[in-house]
Image (cartoon, rainbow, N blue to C red; front, side, top):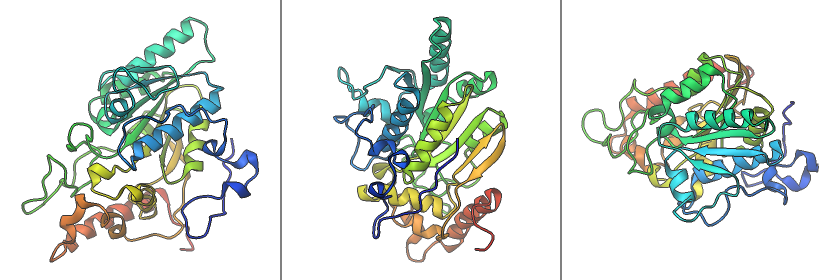
Length: 332
């Protein structure tokens, strides 16, 4: 499956001009026949990146499978805001798992479909970073190790947002959360902790691993469709800003996701069987400060005087990602 590069951008906006694209190049979201798998009426916050990511990803998966899809969903923001009992915004077969066993539940569903001879039915597991990188990490690793036929999607908003913005192992250094206060000599989350689950997934040498952001819809949909064309364990890690937990403006969700990529702080790439096969290049690298400043969780870095040494350490992390994945063209 080849990826189509869309080079036209509407002047003054961050959106791709779907009107000027051939129908086969347009996004699933631009198609009136999209399934609206996560429908209106949910209770997500205004500007919720996770709601966008889930809608984009599951609509793309439904498109790729002809509607033959079942989703398992870990406890967390996505589950809570989309299914306040007895209501639901899901328009697909959907099951709520415990916080830590979405991967195991999805594995069981896939095994049941295989036993029933329903090989056309595909399975997706979903969770936030808390239910994926922390509580559900053991079940997820087991799914990878067994190469179960499941696509696991992590919607990463970098903290336990549903329970009060506590730190997770995906929370970046220096970020203020309810459990990493912006006080003391080293305010916010400490350096040197956490884990990089996309790289851990690659270490399992599963068929497909990818990262994506809600700021590049075509890239996200392409990766979900590609994953659904593969059998075996697959993992997609989607960067989804959270206005409430990050202290950012609701209209900045897409902008922040784009800045995370363009600064190098969140590398966007694909890997197959443990090897990186494609990276999304950065058009123009932006300083990490441009990404950090719009978020109140990093406000303590920009006081009087600003924490220049700490900001430099954050910049060094982004620069390392750029070197590691080759995110900049050589001529830049």
